[in-house]
Image (cartoon, rainbow, N blue to C red):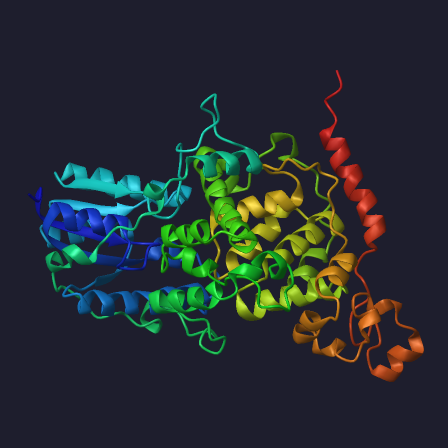
Length: 478
């Protein structure tokens, strides 16, 4: 028998109505269920630009979620305001005896959720929350000494050893959908919330549950080739599901089950990427300070980054003179997405070549990436800067030219985002400053006029980066 007459489900980064842990448990435990979503002003008001692709993606996905819930016989009440206040108000308004929601382990979200829980409990309203964003969270995967893992490979081995069909089974929402209440409210427009449309539609990035399903269906036809194709930015190699994972328009359990059950090199490599996601989430749970700009390795927390004037701006604005770096930054600025290999290469370039503090790059990605996830973004940047949880030593430094030659040999990706270099022959596309001056003039690509000269010399900067880290790695002298 149901425990509650009426419950409220608070949707957040889980914008789907199928295989949804909180929704499932609410439907199981209550006779009537009201679904709600809040456009949280505490988040919206911190965004740097009114044209934000993430807000538009969420807006479209919430609209589709509402339509889908209505089709099930339910609805979605959408409000704008401070979520920590609006959720409590709606629980009272709809006479909910319990509020259900899924975990979000970002420190700011944890603080918000704690405030909501305290306020609800003071009113005698039960709070129930569930794991939904990852396969294993928090303290589910620990070392033999019951401490969190700080290196990926041992964590991955333990993760795979722990995995059973139980952890990837779906939550069957449809069987209890008749308990959904048909309560909805109009979806506020982007403009009413102070935002403006972006180029999201022109980019043809599909949104919502249907968009996630469309991308997944396409990827499943290519999964076998993922191992070989994923590192080449001009090739259709990735799944492109990162933003859908970020906002929960696809189920991580469904994705992990597909990769685990299909087998093969491609599926195993993709599953490994999903495990990386779990790894960084549990790092953030155990070390919330890393999400606030603190280095995982304490000895590098106060590393004296030189931060040469103008270098960070040149990197942001794709004016470094290194074609692969500039093409990657244009991809980010124009689309809100960057290929995963290029995220590593551009991060390494900013920190190890330009000697700019990783926190500046991490913040720029946080403001620009449509799939921004605090745990993965912080973890990835600290990995690239050699200040995070990484078994590799600090002297790993990507060479931007050799990376370009290896992963974009014909310059297809470079030419797509750097049309001013379209006429440069393949032999010189990765280092156009080596093109003879007469050829530069003939082709209309004069370095320093039509395209910047390299902002730094990689070989010289590598020496400086090694010296910087070597000094920080040395034990203090008595």
